[in-house]
View 1 (cartoon, helix red, strand yellow):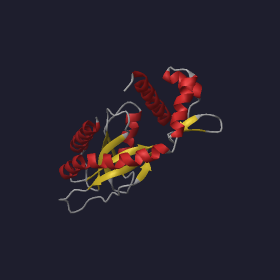
View 2: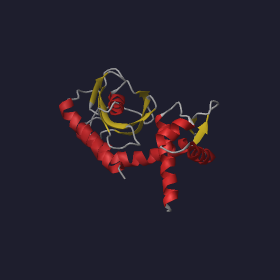
View 3: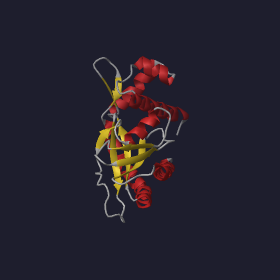
View 4: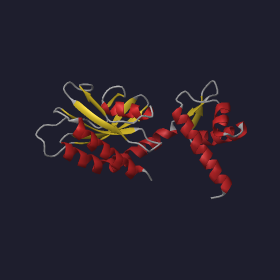
Length: 211
């Protein structure tokens, strides 16, 4: 790939990342400053991204993510699920609790992969596709700790369901992913035991996705 083409691609990807981090959009001037390029360069990048549906302009001229990224996100979820299942299976069997991978979608957490333990008589039925505010539940709080730059294990009781306890750890080291790995149970969850289990599973999954 020619140097100029590679540079254009890199700038386009950085521009998309900026838009993803700024839900209200950015002006071309703000984008030019953030990318350290001229406004004509920004206009060309935005025009190309608009043609592919990855960027759009609002009535005020601000640049926002385009709806084309939704299709990309939908394609990524099955890949995440496939990568997560082995680690979640080991976590569920080791902890005797329902294990899950939760990703952030704005201010909500979305459970995209769930594995139940095979050997317990009773466990929480947690549905793939479940959504909840990030401020509720161990999984969401773990993601918020990642956003705050202080990733740490979180434990909660009764946040999402009466009597249910949860422990979760954020997946670190992946700039493109805000997610956590956790377990949920109606029984007692000793954080000193469950914490290292979810932390190891989060680390394992992070390494598997770090390509």
